[in-house]
Length: 344
Image (cartoon, rainbow, N blue to C red):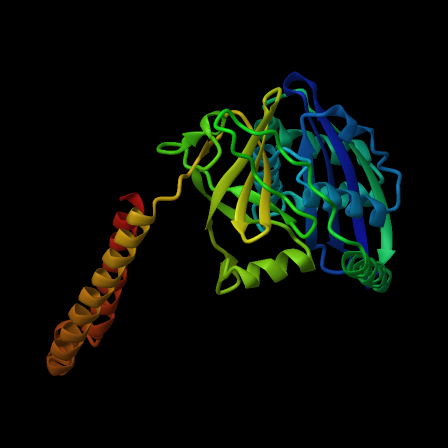
């Protein structure tokens, strides 16, 4: 089917590190390009119990709901997703090998390719993947997703927000108040491996940085409401820790990101979280503005001088305009300034 899609449905288990996951990949049958893929992983074996023989739409919905609820290992999922992106990278990836093995119905070899790519992020060289394949018309995929969006929208607007359980009061006697109108969004903690605070040291009232990661119409609404994006890119926003709950090596962090708006993140105990420092944030903005102004002045002066000597410069450089050298130098200077600001 040239106008169809090949769908890879898979699950994996890495027993050495108690890591489990589901993934789904959509490949255009005409161009052999990967249109989309999604993955969710956890340290709970119940995730592996999902049958990959289920229809593709059910698996895609399961993955989406697990992410929406925050019931997954964030760091592990992000690492595996990055590895799969490398697997499908045009020119350097292995999509052609995967495609050839699918056409030969050699699903064991397809699974072996995923085993190889998942060994590093899962931390288990013995990771095992199982694969199933579906061939679907593109129009059927669009219809299924449209019907799902309509159903989700109806559920969102017709169902009241669930009452959140009141957390127990801490030693100081303070408690975080949730009401029936509270909204809980899936967020990702902004990590800082060098200067961040260990997640197990977080406490109520700590100011941290998060990104709204919920991929739904509701998530996009609150991203726009909270100005949490810039040029279609999700940006970090400050949040205040409400509660930190530990379950084995997994921590669930709840934080306020707006009036009656809460963010929920589930991470492993090895991560370090970036704390919000308003003074440092203001300082960086001032530095950036000063650097931009200085660069603008420098570029303007250099351009004026270059225009004056353009004719003689062409002769000395075999006709190559010096202005391109000036522009290139200015770009390098800007990169150096931005790196300095980021590192500080």
